[in-house]
Length: 425
Image 1 (cartoon, helix red, strand yellow):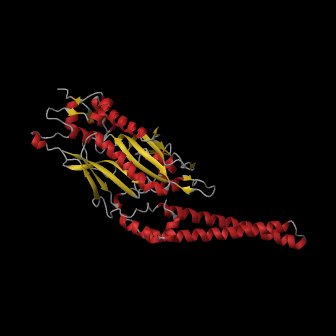
Image 2 (image 1 turned 120 degrees about the vertical axis):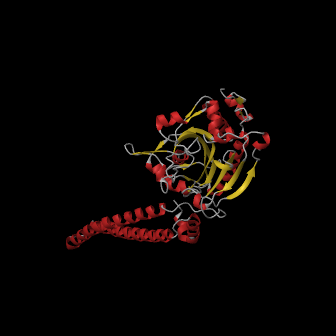
Image 3 (image 1 turned 30 degrees about the vertical axis):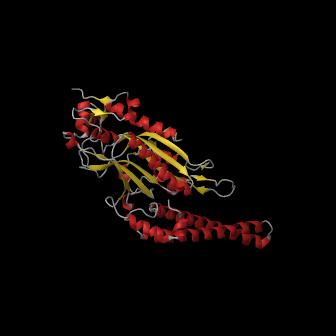
């Protein structure tokens, strides 16, 4: 949820953000009006409640007709207080409903526009020239077939389209990627967590994952639980309704989980292979920090992702995602996209988002400023992907050899126990 103080004091900043995202700017005025209505209703309730309390005290000292009049008045006030409380609660609910519909305010400098309006921040590495090497590169599924590493046919037989089995060296490769990522996270001071993949509605809503993209999320109505598309959701809820200790600096977690996405609206896109699938595994970094530390933490998470991409030796670029392509909670997001040779383009492997205080405000995660005993403040949250199943695509295609084998990047060899993935025949 956005900070209502920003709406009151600087509504133009929120309007500008809404326009940059392609969202309805008039919602800003709707929320401001609802805020005024809520404050007015609350004031009326508090005034009546004070009058009721004062009248109740007078009854004990009154006698005769005066006492009877006061009893009648307190009865009237009780009904009025009840109605005023109901009106104040309704106004509060309406304000929350409208305020929850406004996504996070984008940070200055984020490109305006939609999916294709990103800004390229940096290009790292040079794609291999397969023509100069004298062979046509195979796509990741053709390579995997030779290695007997991925089985989408049996995945579809068992679970339907966009499911798969990782098999043999395919399974080992994913475990090696996740193992390397977790090792790097732990070395950098992140606390490892294996997170739940089913969460309550208040958690997934608080994290900002069903406001605008509910069709992407699997829901279990019999249990009133949601399957998460990233461990970010569970990690955002980990300290819900808590006052956390940030006196020693940011609190950093690395969550490992299986992730589930319905891929609604992706009909006809990436129908083969494991780029766009319903289930995958991931290591997700998550940070709680003071709001003034968030920008530096964002760069730190991006550097972690850069180090991991360097470890698997793939060319990539970093983009500053346009406002209209940001999720509800993100105020800024950097994507790292690896070069996929057979597609002749960059495809997203990681992203890292600065969610400022948006998620923590919804979920009630606060901290107490160091050296004070005064009011708490809302924490900032950030997230970033450190490895996921999709990385196998770029790795296989980038490191393939003419004979169908795949050279294993040096950093992965201790985890995989192999220097080269050899085709079966």
